[in-house]
Image (tube, rainbow, N blue to C red; front, side):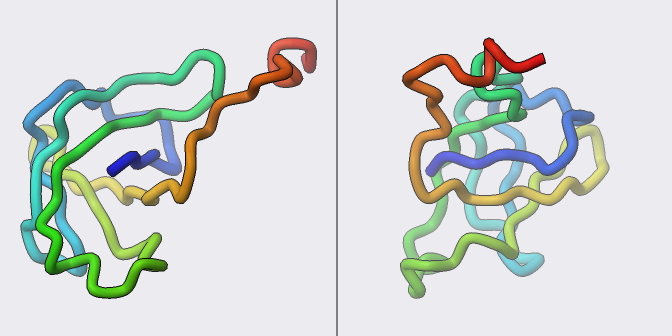
Length: 89
């Protein structure tokens, strides 16, 4: 799954625990700031049982250095193929 954090504070590297509704369901595999997207992104493997609803986009969190941070599951890729975000500013 692809996730983003609403804030850019946590440094997501790998193996951080992922929670769904306060239950441990997986781990991140990689993460970091997406410079082209402006989002703090991470990939993770999660237990398929927590995805009983295909539309479940919220309720996820990641624990980094003992602190919980909200995660939002992205329904698709956050890629900006026309480079609009680079031209703004």
